[in-house]
Length: 312
Image 1 (spheres, rainbow, N blue to C red):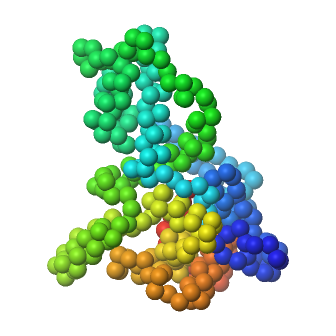
Image 2 (image 1 turned 120 degrees about the horizontal axis):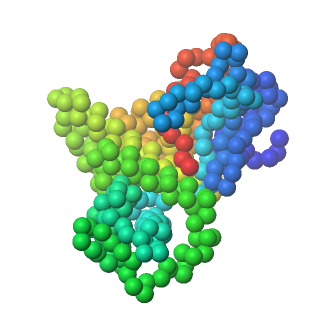
Image 3 (image 1 turned 60 degrees about the vertical axis):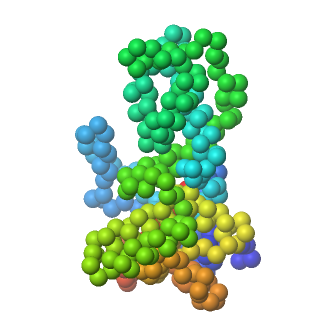
């Protein structure tokens, strides 16, 4: 009972909705921790696995574990950060040498397709020409006398955890690029003011434009690097965690909707006691969501709403 909660909310006392006796199971690794609840499959439940356009039916063995809010231990690097750019350079150099060693030839278009979502054409060419010489037809060969960088020969430079953080950043950046955001990765004051002005100007004339602006705002706010930063800051120094980035709760969903109305987080305006009460309420609702068993009854249909996404 005296142990500090490993989550953003205090652990409940007494039996849980799924029959657990006053405790919460968790999935934990070096990158994150998340509360989980095991659900036995019904006799009619099965898995559908999709591979190469084909569908395969498989039985569910051992039950299903439903996870709640992810508590990140490490910050996902932002796409424009020095750490992420250095990781991209290391991967590109490793890719170049893997293709050009032993007299291999590399076509520019084939190589650039591997990095076009996270690197501009000019940046890619700059790094490629450091190690390779151009040939006719857009092909490249390894430059004579060039050796694989010594710092990349040490396998410890690319741990599984570092790769996962890098991949999370890449996927988040690709998502924003699909929405047309190639350079905006954080909710800055200038970005917030510009969107507020646009929304106010077109509030009565163009509902679609307003909805698009809100979608862009939320996509940046819920990006992996921002979500993980919120959670790490809360775990490390007990910074205030924005309620609108939490999941699995109708209260969190309402907090996100309220914040989106003004494109601003409202936690700073809340009384601390009220903030802590709502945060605990969101945590309890999230636990109810992941432990809810079909047929239990008594759960409000709105209790499963999500306010954001997990970081990590």
